[in-house]
Length: 348
Length: 239
Image 1 (cartoon, each protein chain N blue to C red):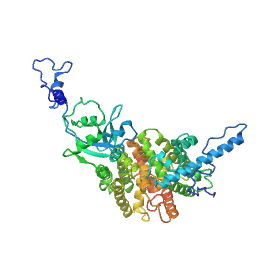
Image 2 (image 1 turned 135 degrees about the horizontal axis):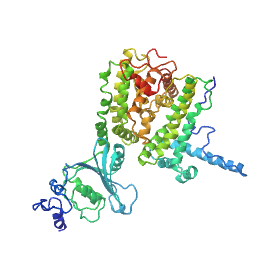
Image 3 (image 1 turned 180 degrees about the horizontal axis):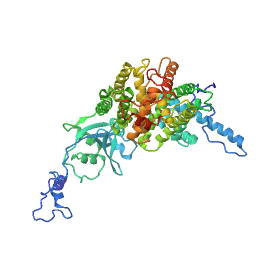
Image 4 (image 1 turned 180 degrees about the vertical axis):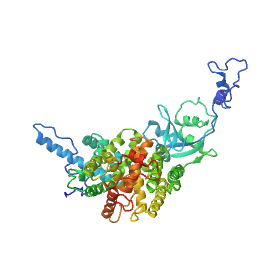
């Protein structure tokens, strides 16, 4: 009965939006706005997105928890919007939180979801939900977000209803994160060091500078910082994701750097008594240093291009020649920017 | 050449002579106040020791200090009474660790100790101090705090790696003035040396090379390698 009453007010069910007499179709609204809408009544047509709907136990005791399923006392939803950002929709008692999260922040919510159940659900557009559902608790609001018309007021009720839908998948959070990290990190090392071959004829110091700048730019990018924060803070919760991160991220970079230092040894630029793997790890460690720690701890923002160049120059000069007084850095013959970079580094 | 002090006992988290309580105010009851203060200081040391042990017992699998305190069988109320807050306990742990790491850089004359000997002693302290498994736990808490935007992560950085880098940069500057080190940014040099010791974040979390075998020899090798690179670099026919 109630459904029949509210049906005419749903988008797409009302009359056509056309101006026939030349007067504004809707008072106060330019006609083009009223006309340039899609079949759902929206200015822009959106494809339905997949949401991770998380049915979770409460983080703090609430009086109504005694009436709800032990594992499904609350529900919120999130979805990936870019490589390093997620959108969170979480109904609170006092407000609705809608915000973007970095990967490491999203993982904290997904971990909470893993304590209950996570369903991957495609939203319906324009949907069949209704604002006139009465008590707008988390289950009702999540149902409305997804465009569903389920008559349930509990997270568990919504969970059961969605679970019965074809196409809805249960998500194993640990497995998803392992795949997600692999997906996010897949191209990062290659973008940073995979192209070093094109500089192989340059002196090692100049080659290292070029690779170093690319590496630092990559390591301080929001995507890399997010995945790194996640890997470090959630190591013991998701060891497989940590392994994937380390293998496909830092270790992949180390492999390329080892090849570079071996090349340096074959050309007589690096002492053959040194272990190339050890040097590669030192190089990467020095590039990161305190700067990287400060960034992942949220103490500072990403460095400027000039700061990156200065740091890389300092690392390369120290790695190659130490800081001993007798050393006087030589500008790279093949590089017109060599001298300039030395000056930027403040090394005489 | 003067002897370089090291923090030999790695289980001691607070350097001898390093006070973890405020100075006692002057007054008629100075003696009794001093005794009370000593008791408070002893209890603080004890709490720090117990919490550090709890961190180690958990094998770093915690990112919440309250949980560690509970595992150490200490009440949060007592921690608050002694330190002011749970976060203050964490900050004092980091301060104490930093103090003990910095011992080899205290009060030495540049003319009496070579750069290499100072760096070797200091490097050993850094590696031993920062390889202590409870430090990983502190880093995890710092990362969690970073998402809380409380400023705690910044303070942890400043009291730990930040302060160590600053102090080392001061010492390097002395050697620079004495003509041992070439021109450059001493703070960056200090930063690079600490990274060479494997104290940067990823190596820190991913490296378990000191977990077995001859730990002492492994530490000595790492430090010697770092000092050698800092002083001479890796170039063929290097200095």
